[in-house]
Image (cartoon, rainbow, N blue to C red; front, side):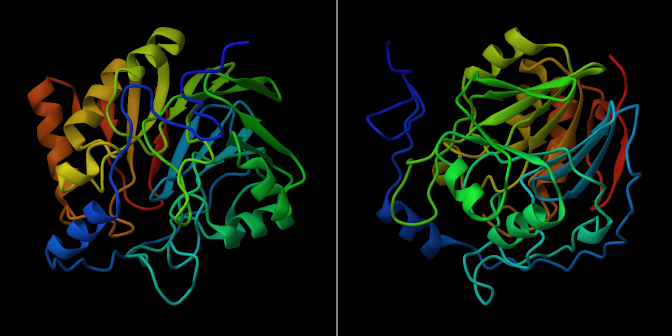
Length: 313
């Protein structure tokens, strides 16, 4: 049996688009970073309904999104910690509290984890979810053991284009252009986006990703997509970030490529991870939508705890 092209002898890669940045690039990025101040965001947390028939989406913050519909409650890349870091006293801090208090989460059916970086896979949050919820964790290849060791009793590992059932729905892992590693070692676990195929439509969670042609493949397989959650922040400087983080104009192109009816902006205004000013992603997205002739109502930016009923196809 042929090995998939993104499997590289016990490691993983982005076929045709390897991530080659090394220590010298990281040091240059740190050395050249402008000293831009962010402002604390005032958040009024919301309390979601226990469950929904019609699909509703709530942006908790960063890449943490609560999808509710068809009787399912699905959470993505959950982080409730104050810092995206292996320690509580250092590392990127939150500039906005979670838009949903942890204790107000509805009973979860599934948690989707896109990759192992600290702002997407938070140990303390995973441990608490494992204790207090009976959700199934869907993770890319290589992450199942880590999540199970933090107490999760139901864990499903998926390769790109792999699928697994979730009640009356199906979870599909789809390609993303990124990398993994919580320390010096890189790419020993996979990264992915997810498509949740439910009776009332398909939902796409992009995770973290740079631009590449695989978005058209996702659209070819799954369009039309009822709702896409697409990152718009942490994109500057482009010489360093473009291989792994799309910018707002590319986010609009992802929206179009995957055939999304409506999109939600994520991965912005929560953790200061790159050089873009705090409001730059939102403003740049508005300009990119105008330039592309896309109705702004089709790609929405909401506040922490904000959400909306997902339009039908």
